[in-house]
Image (cartoon, rainbow, N blue to C red):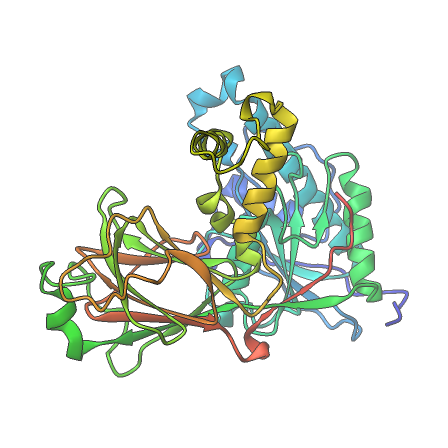
Length: 432
């Protein structure tokens, strides 16, 4: 793909906020400066309104290069959410520096886009936005970290390329990000990123999505929900009419639980068409291969104290035959054992396999359940079905706000077979 010598300059109409609502004057000024045709230096003060608001573009004719039009979803740094009084104390200095690094990166990227003639529109990643609102763009940039990239993956239309940019590499892992901008030289990083995209010097990749289909098992309501008043999600209306159950997707995982995190939930879980197994627990996580390195990794992780207790018990029972002297293990040796054990618990090489975990199970001896007492609480599968029963059952995808499940819900989960629905992104192109 050749780059032409001139491209249309980025221009914007007056800045607007959430789905077109006018912004306050200070925020509008920042939005115009960050995504406008006028160059700007990094001169905003840290006590100003965050530069993450939307700017509606005037789309101008431009050469047929990719990307011509970009939607930019950017996070608002945590420091911005602190009350003004809290910002004055030094204990939040780390958060302040992270905010500054992020906003410097955002401005550097906006300047690089402007220089390349890319028409861009910025929007806060936490705003409610429909895929149809983004359809005019060629690419979606997610400026923040993994959480912002996940939000962009949910917001972008199927088939749109999502480019995650880690704008705070000192605090954010950025496993889902394709590039890192800052903190050393954000201008150079941003220029290299945009040039790489304009020249087509990148490799695309498809990331499998978890397909979550909601079915309504009305025939089994009495059998599975009479021990909780109203059954799953009885306090809220159904998501959709029963005849058109929705299908949604996740990149990392789906979590099913009670809305009240202190209340246990009754679940029936079916793995690969086997028997339904009843559990009482704090919820269930079903993850993709990519998600095995996110929440699932921490939910399954064992710690040094647990490993030490197991080794001590095995030694006392004479099961290790003196080969393992726990008292003589130094910190690095114990750490190596813990790391290897945790890797064995969650890592696998099948991109089309799901991993499931029933968290903190209490019992699987519930009345009326078809448990055979064999199925484990954690493992790999091609298909996982979950039939929850509780007071207010919710499902959360990729850590986004939970959704109430209607009475009689059955969640049927597998890797999406249609690759056209997978996340389209690019291989990492800038080192951290």
